[in-house]
Length: 307
Ligand SMILES: O=P(O)(O)O[C@@H]1[C@@H](OP(=O)(O)O)[C@H](OP(=O)(O)O)[C@H](O)[C@H](OP(=O)(O)O)[C@H]1OP(=O)(O)O
Ligand SMILES: Nc1ncnc2c1ncn2[C@@H]1O[C@H](COP(=O)(O)OP(=O)(O)OP(=O)(O)O)[C@@H](O)[C@H]1O
Image 1 (cartoon, helix red, strand yellow):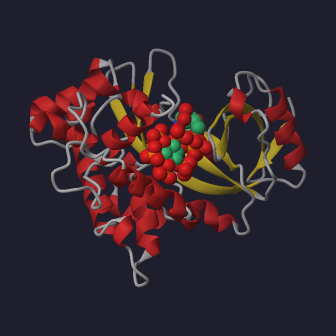
Image 2 (spheres, helix red, strand yellow):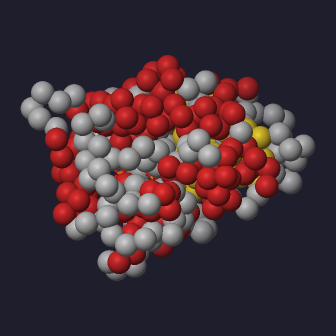
């Protein structure tokens, strides 16, 4: 296996996973069965952006904002790391040979670059379990009609289900975000049970630590987008909207350890670009015009149950 230099330290990389925007690699010691990795690389994964970026600092866009509102222990930590020249060939060779890549992403390659990001490794060890979930829109969309019977997340799920029947990972969660932050313990438990069948993870989701994260996410989703995308005007703060959309689409990693301890960290907080503005507007307009906030009884949405 080819060696790479991360921040000057020699190590090996192993393909772990990928999404639409990033490749994720495990970092292994230089020699098989050799001693520990340098502390900086220990319990870290390497995340490489699929899109070329002009300035490496852009890989950390938004970090300061997230650090200001969430405790460090609840964030996937991000640290820039430099790669040696020539890393592109080695990395793309690894990607080409990787097993288990998603079929629809087989054409993706790493465009190269001088930097990657070291992130906290949340992958489960032996006798550990990792649950990944997206809390999504924890408050109703400001553009939704006042008498709505569905929240933003449930409205979009209903629209997609009625269309080509394509379900995203969030649709498959089959959970209403409003339940997750409800004042009712019963509703919170219902949401948690729909998100995971691991009892210790369910307990964590309804407990104080996770609930603080959900309340904070909700507060900033509302603060950063108080008027709604359909009511934006020329004076609107579009960076604020980007932040709102980013915290509406982050992931919560819940790692249940073998001793029952739980580590919960928010990740996938890559600042969304304003090139998505037209898509966001079209989605919201489609939900309003198509009546998806209203509709018939929705068995998942908390708003529908309340009517
Ligand atoms: O539109 P949504 O609410 O379904 O969210 C999209 C996500 O779908 P899901 O959470 O699974 O329903 C979607 O997730 P998947 O790729 O389906 O896993 C993306 O995160 C997408 O963001 P981007 O366009 O890649 O920046 C997300 O789009 P935006 O957050 O940019 O709207
Ligand atoms: N810190 C982490 N610890 C453990 N696994 C991780 C971590 N970060 C990412 N992964 C795994 O890699 C997958 C892809 O990573 P990630 O979500 O960062 O990619 P992405 O391209 O940003 O995703 P998207 O398609 O949402 O834009 C995740 O779904 C998860 O399974």
